[in-house]
Length: 327
Image 1 (tube, rainbow, N blue to C red):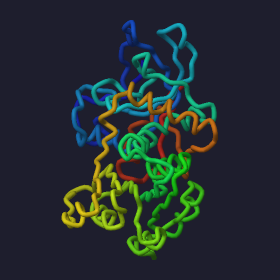
Image 2: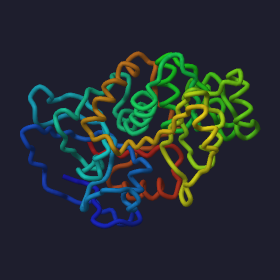
Image 3: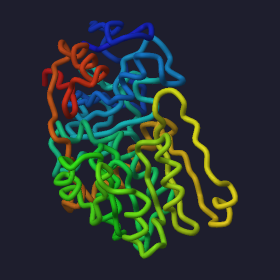
Image 4: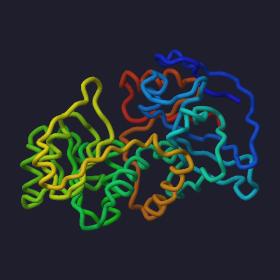
């Protein structure tokens, strides 16, 4: 079968498209024929050697959607989707014609999503769920602030929070993003190009602040987020900018307000654990409460995969790149 492979870390040029032996399954495994698999920024960082724990040689790729073609009789022909913190790092990933997975790691794809959409939803929605539900223990009474409302994780988080009944605010960096933030579902939109974050949040919450803040940006923004966190509020951090990632804040104010600061790493959840999260999200997609809002999604064949990786790496790709092997 055809697979994208890398045996050393470096620029996307270390990737090679290779014919490798067709997989031999263990008793508890299934073979999924890949129909679509997104190229996430973390996939590029993995090839570059910026992620921890990767065992080489390896096929990269975290997200996938496809059809079970071998293994458990009860699963044959099932359209499935998935992702995993181990996929593409310690087990071969989805940037290939096929992927081998534990039976417990395949869950039915929502009928409302195309293969193309389902193959690019995993990382973003799993990360948002881990932050809001498993870490912050979100309830309907919460007021949620999402820093980066139009990004992949940000837009997923806004929809999940709205689906579960919370009030949601979101930030954008420019006026051109306002319409998309409104489409995603933010009830209060703060344009950081012209508005002060602290003043805007406090005005929108009668001076109380947000009880849950998901910061998808990191860096100095985290300091401001702490200032607009309500008493016993939860600040969720999922990333840090390149270079110096240190921040400083008033520790006395922090403990007097009984604030909580959490780090979330989607890499900590393997493909089977992520399957359970995607199963929990599926009713939201089936009901139309959850959708994908990428401005553009461009398809690439496996033969074009290295070019696609380069475009993600140098940020010349507008929207999302999705590998679509011949199916």
